[in-house]
Amino acid sequence: MDAPQTGEFAHIGKSVVIKGELSGSEDLYVDGNVEGNIELRNHSLTVGPNGNVKANVSAKAVVIQGKLDGTVIASDRVELRKSAVVTGDVTTQRIAIEEGAFLKGKVDIQKEAGKAAAPASS
Amino acid sequence: MKFFRSSSNQTAGPAVPQKLTRRSSGMGEISRLLNSQEALCVLDMGSTSANNIRFFTGKGHKNYSEDLLRSSLDPALRIQDSEGKSVLDSKKFLDENLVYANAQFDVVLCWNLPDYMEESLVKPTIDRLWSVMKPGGFLLAFFHTRDAGPDSTCYRYHVTGTDMLEMQEVKFAPPGRPASEKQSPRLQRVFNNRHIENLFRDFASIKFFLARDAIREVLVVR
Image (cartoon, rainbow over all chains, first blue to last red; front, top):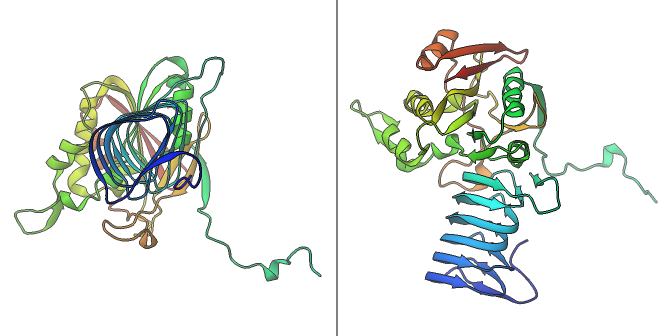
């Protein structure tokens, strides 16, 4: 998933710098700098290739193409694209990591209630 | 009209990274440990692999990823020694990497890291690993048995079964260079048995497995 093309989403462009708490009830695309915490509950966060996020993140799905320092908690899935550089612990049900992605931290795969396996894919 | 292109008309597509497999006696021993105990702490020091995360977390263990070879390429680590030679600052490197509580890990997968890591970092890294491993913990490392030249391939290892590994060539772009300039890390040296024993002299025991592909597997117990 690259920059969202349709639907409701908030877009933080690459020249934008935000410090503080970010929360919302729509998908968020960050291609700028964010420092603080990001909470999206049932929505997705995409960190674009120019994105630099220093925050603890909580969302349904997290897709990372840029840089993220902080804890990631995704109730559904995490995707690390080839240009992703992630430093922090990741907790999710499913994780996909492209060749070239960098991850430094603990990965905790939580099994969904009623499902036996926690899929992860390269 | 042609419905299928003949092979002679095929154009070269994008290069697909070649994946090889190897049977690993060392991984087999570690799998026995993983299958016999619960909630072990595993540190994977190779390039990040979703396969490995699935393998370890699927068995109920905790997985930590830390790609030390890539971290060691950070140009900010470079200093000049007393002779003016450019070396990596091992103290700064260990201030920023392998920062864990003492005796945290039951299993450490070094893969071929020592063969490709710069000399000044190898011993300090192994010493740090001794500290963060639990007594009785297992460490697996691979070493070349002979000098295959600077083109010796550096692999990313994916665990695909109890004792099976898939090997995929690792390539990095030099720091500050575009991805199009990716290159495989260079083999830094060839350790002989005595070097390896010295490297792990603080550990309780060491076992060697010699494989057909000129790779010596070393299973070390903390």
